[in-house]
Amino acid sequence: MNEAEIVQAIEALRQQWGKRLLILGHHYQDSSVVALCDAVGDSLELSRIAAESEAERIVFCGVRFMAETADVLTRARDGSDNGRRVYQPAPEAGCPMADMADAPALERAWAAIRAADPDAHWVPVVYVNSSAEAKAFCGRHGGAACTSGNGRRVLRHFLDENAKILFAPDQHLCTNIFRELGYQPEAVAVWRRDQADGGLTPAVIRRARAIAWDGCCPIHAGYTLGDVAAARAGMPGATLLIHPEAPSPVAARADRTGSTKAIIEAIARAEQGTDFIVGTEQHLVARLAEKYSGLSIRPLRPIVCEDMGRTTPLQVLNVLQSWPEDCIVRVPDAFVADARVCVERMLAI
Ligand code: 13P
Ligand code: SF4
Image (cartoon, rainbow, N blue to C red; front, side):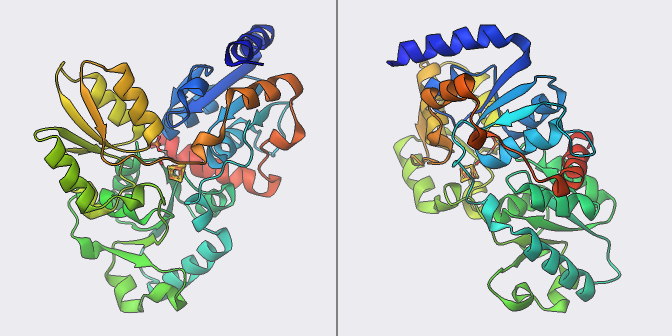
C-alpha cells in the first residue's frame, strides 16, 4: 500500500466509526501522522481532551505515559473500562524520562524526606511524563501532576499553601519553574537516585523549598550554552523560544520558555519577517518552519525524540483494522483510582 492508499483506508474506517473513535496526536509526531489526527496538542491539552471525550476508542499517537493518562481518565472510578479502550499504534514508544522515576524509589525517598523534616508540609508533584504508578504515588500522598504548560500554576498553588515540594522526574523543569517564580537556585536540592538518602543531609532537606528528582529528558537536556551562542551568532536579533525541559542555564537565556503549545502560539502571533530560534523537538520545529514560511524559523540544534517518531500511518491503519491486543494501553487496576486523583487535581488547579 502506498501512503495515499493508507490515508484513504484510514479515512474510510474513520467514517465508519464516526464519533465513537478519537485519534489524538502529540505535536512531536511526524506530519504524516499529525494529518490523521482529530486533535493534536501538548500534554495538557491532550489530557483535557481525553478527560472530556466519550469516544469508545481512543487511538493515541504519542508515547506511553500520554496513552496511560488517557486510559486513567476514561476509566470508571472502580477501574472498569465500560467497554472503552485506549490504543497506542506504536506500543513500544515510551519516554525515557518517565522511566527514571520508579514508584517504589519515590515511596522510599518520600519516607526519608519526611523523616528528615517532619514538621514541614511536603507535597509530591509529578510531571505528567511519568508512569501511572508514579502518578498513583502522588495522588495517594495529596499531590498533583503538572505539565510544562501548567507547571508554574500547579507549583504556585502548593507553594501558596506553604508546602514544600518533592518534584519528579524532571529536575530541569523543576529548577526552571522555581527560577521563573523568583526563587534562588539553593531553594531546589537535587535527589540523586544512586546515592544513599539521595545524597542529601537532613539539614539540606530542611533548608530546601523543593527537592527535584534527578531525572531529565535525554533529548532536551543535551542543549548547551554553546548551542545558544552558535544559534544567536547565526541569527542575531532572533527570538529564542526554549522548552522548559532544557537545563536551567540554557533556558534562562531564552526570550521565552513554554510548552509545545506556548511555542506554537508565540510563532502564530508573530509579525511577518520575525526570526525565531526554537529549542525543542525537530518534528515540530520543521513543521513550524514549513507552515510559517513568512518567518525565519531555525532549530536551536536539531534534536529528535525517537520514541515520538515511532508511530507511522501504517500502524494507525493496523489498529483501526484489527484492534490488536498488544496495542491496548491498560493501566493496572491497582493504580487507576490514585493516578486519576493525581491528574484530576491538576486539571482542577
Ligand atoms: P509538552 O507538554 O510541552 O507538549 O511536552 C511534552 C514532552 O514530552 C516534551 O518533551
Ligand atoms: Fe520523553 Fe523527552 Fe521524548 Fe518528551 S522529548 S517524550 S520528555 S524523551
